[in-house]
Length: 406
Image (cartoon, rainbow, N blue to C red; front, side, top):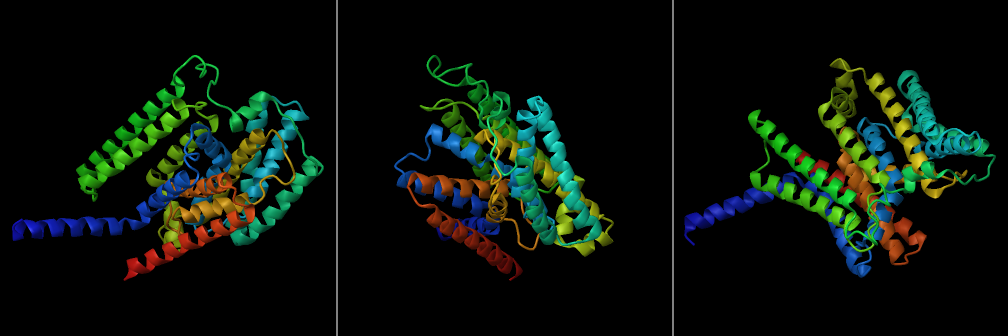
């Protein structure tokens, strides 16, 4: 190799390492998830990535992932919400009473429950945005208030059972009898949905890159774009195989469709809407945002209304999955949602974070829980390890901030 060629190779390698280093914050969380999945796949002798277990991981963590979407928006704006577990329990109890004791049609009970969640969000948003009490205090009070209301509504007892239609949102699959495993080599609805998701992903990525290039905003090298495209496509195809083709597959959980719609919708809101940009601006520098004409109180109010609706949806899904509503439901949900947001890259000081990152952080917590349960690790050690992961994630965030300043 000539000296000129060697110099070009060294320069190219240096550029690649420099680019990867600049994206360490964004890609680090995905690398952690991949490492944890591979680790538990080996330790559990292949039981982690079986069709049935992957489906269980999705269903069992769906309500935490939904809460994490709202929580990361709250954290980006510089707040915190300690009440989401109690709100989820309260709304789940209300929906359970409506559908079981008051004979509401299941769909009416769900709609009314979401409205109740919005009203809860209005209540908390009023105290934070209008009165000016710190969100930590308001939501700490909310945690006690709505836990108490849950016990009052249920009479401190557990209620069950609920109609089949009501339970489907939390534990059902998309048309499970249409392509039964006994007569079909694959669950073709899942295969179709997977292919649609793949096409939508590829088209959206290509359109986005073409648009950024035309506006001279593209900063990613082509090789990195291809790596991202291949990784995302491979992930969609692998999930489609596990849920629709692999032995033991049961099809697509309904809650996965709900999650997919929420992730796409909220990613668009945070990245492409005025409201999303205002959230980042308020979290980055509230005084500067106010001086530039952004009504930060309105942003705060709507964020808590949104969090109330998502907490209500999580409560309905949790109640439906368990087929019961109890006074202890939703216990520690708030901590799991906060942990998912911070592990997923949200900054403690606000202004930084993404919906995709929060979902990835929630999946890390979910895989940790599932993998340790498969290995028979006791709950006390599970709590210890999850706490350690959260601490390391925040330390990584602090390290990145210091590195960016130097």
